[in-house]
Length: 202
Image 1: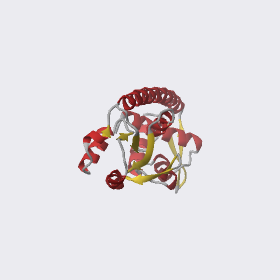
Image 2 (image 1 turned 90 degrees about the vertical axis):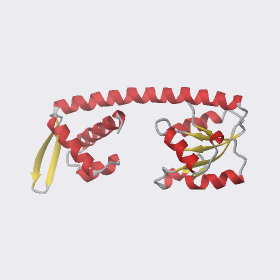
Image 3 (image 1 turned 90 degrees about the horizontal axis):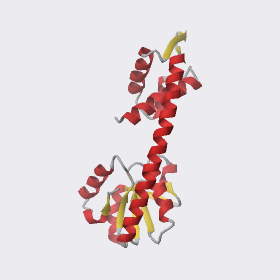
Image 4 (image 1 turned 45 degrees about the vertical axis):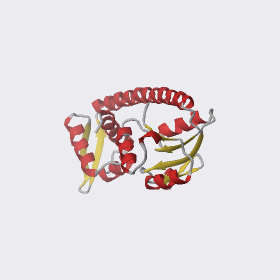
């Protein structure tokens, strides 16, 4: 697990406890999309560090409360998260601009996206200022009905990509990831997709 992910979980727990001290571990796990076991481990650590106090309201109900040190830690994590987020978006913007220049130089006309997250959204906005046409979106990360739509496109499962390429004139497959990009490229090549079709560079 990356340091950013650890910070995000700790910040999320402190923030949710600050909002409602009677929040349960199950609710914390659901809100943060992590396991109850992981929440339990983080809570024990936060109590050990003196950031969170635990008290029994009644036999079946536990109440959490942030200590002054816990409030200071939450504030620190909030500032740190915002700073990292700004740096992250600057990095995406620079990477997308470089990619657009490269695609134009290669005279790419048509592309499909693999990945439909924040990077893909920024990539889509930049493509709007070019003559490069986006034909489709593919992802293996779709979990909710809302994630199946991307700017009017239906997000299709990754396993449909190979057949799609046979029936459509696609110049490049753009992988819209940073940390996972090597894994996604490997997955596509294992599916039998030509390496020359895949753009996995930033």
